[in-house]
Amino acid sequence: MKKTLIAILLAVFLSPAFAVTSMKATVNGMVCAFCAQGIEKRISKMPATKAVYVDLKKKIVVVEPKDGMALDQKAIIEEVKDAGYDIVKVESISKSVAELKAELVTNK
Amino acid sequence: MKLWFLCIASLLVSLTVKAAPMGFKDSWMTMSDFSKTYRELTVNYALTPRDAIGVTSTYMQTNNQSQSQLNNELTYTRLVKRWNMPDAQANIWFIGGVGETTGNYFNGAKATVSPGMQADYETTRLYASANARIYVADGITNHVVSTRTGFSFYEANYEETQPWLIVEIRKMSMVSSQYEVTPMIRLIHNRFFVEAGANLQGQPRLSFMYVF
Image (cartoon, rainbow over all chains, first blue to last red):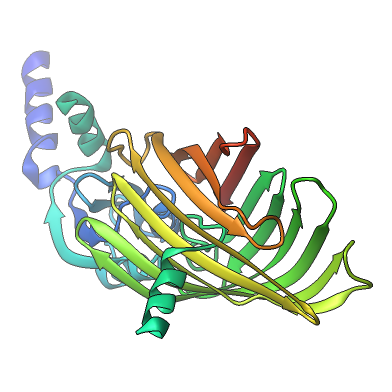
């Protein structure tokens, strides 16, 4: 009975319906970690931001919202512009920053 | 034709070329550069994504130390143009200073201005830049021009340390009529940017940048 309950809870909480929806932005000009610091610093300060992930190889920035909060995509795009870069594509992905980092480690 | 050639040459030959000479909006950046003949310390603040103001102290001396000059200036840095490409970034910068200069080969303190330009191109594996700056005071005109080119040993991600090999060719008219060639190792890690090397005469060189 106990095992069945745990299995049901796991199935419910790990289902896509409960997955985090993060914002994934493809950014032009992002070639140097030193110069891209502004992206992480500025977006991290936004009230709805839980975590920021910058990937120089894939030229993407992923922003994960805090629980129960919505990201302001327009404001994030402006912050990236203020950091000196151009966003060329915005998508929503069902992954957290922690999951993306774990994938990176696995794929190494 | 000759004018065009000089314009292009002045962009391809440059001063103390760094990575971006200012940080992101509302950030502070410190830059320093130390060698026997040239020492520089700069702090600037980015008012906008394209404009920064700051202070710079620059000390230059000849190899035999017979002549030296110290410039203390208020500086203005302007991102004139940026090209953000999928795998590269290119920039043109204006860097100018207004202040005071003193030296042991002229009398007293003189007002000085120092306009300069920098152009750079960078990918995750390649770097090239050029910079030219002229220091003008009453009866004194000096220039510093340099180019830097280099490559990264491997493509690093955002949170990893990235090592580069950079070679700088620099000419400082106040210091020498010779070109100075300096190979350096550049390390970039998060907000730290460090270059260390030695010129072909064996004089060590260290530069450092930090953004906060």
